[in-house]
Image (cartoon, rainbow, N blue to C red; front, top):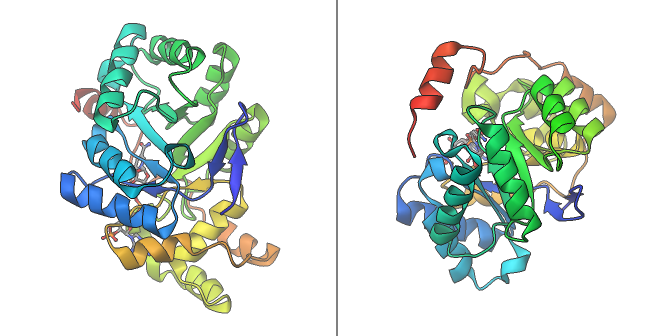
Length: 281
Ligand SMILES: NC(=O)c1ccc[n+]([C@@H]2O[C@H](COP(=O)([O-])OP(=O)(O)OC[C@H]3O[C@@H](n4cnc5c(N)ncnc54)[C@H](OP(=O)(O)O)[C@@H]3O)[C@@H](O)[C@H]2O)c1
């Protein structure tokens, strides 16, 4: 395992396990248990995924020391205000079965996220949160938040994969000491990522798959990755990326794949913003 160190000194594994789109309790518990058995020590859930309780159970049942696993959850927009964020974080703690959340993120920089962030700062100072961060901040938003908040975000979780690389966002995060974390590191399978000829040929040179090559590329850019799978073989395949290194030439070939846009969400489309505001956890 490789690690990034957050601005508060907390060590964050660069490989984590995402549980988006596993709403079924038993399935989420099983997938999380398989991930923990495979060596993952970072689990990424959210109030919006409806599976915090399953994640909490799997962590407790694993027998792994609580302080050896970093569990991330995220608060949804509808709870954004100072008091609302604190109450929502407390509900997450109940579902996770803990009195301290290792890493708490605000899921979108939308609604009253300034008020919500102040609530997170309060809870962090009280020792109830191990680290705090944002998700889905584009560089101009992140820079504004870092200039505004007393405690800048320690993590910014955004979509990052070979087809949407977000270099400016990466540079902005590095300049403010914010650790980048990639959601959708496989572009959720879009654009033929798993059979892409460039990723496949680079992977073959190392005895690895296109999926492993995409993850390794992000890790070598300093980005924490949180791939999701409900299949044990893929869960194990995805974490098996710490025994090889991509050359500079290989990194450059992947850099040339950038399309500069998301195929999953469009935060610049007012319809998306309306949809996200209407979503209820
Ligand atoms: N902050 C945010 O707004 C946000 C948004 C989206 C996601 N996330 C987080 O990021 C995590 C990862 O993103 P994601 O779940 O959206 O997508 P992803 O990890 O890019 O892709 C997941 C898809 O890839 C498949 N897959 C996984 N490993 C594979 C492999 N080795 N070979 C072939 N197929 C493979 C999975 O299928 P199977 O499950 O059938 O194996 C699933 O369909 C989420 O789970 C969530 O924790 C955060």
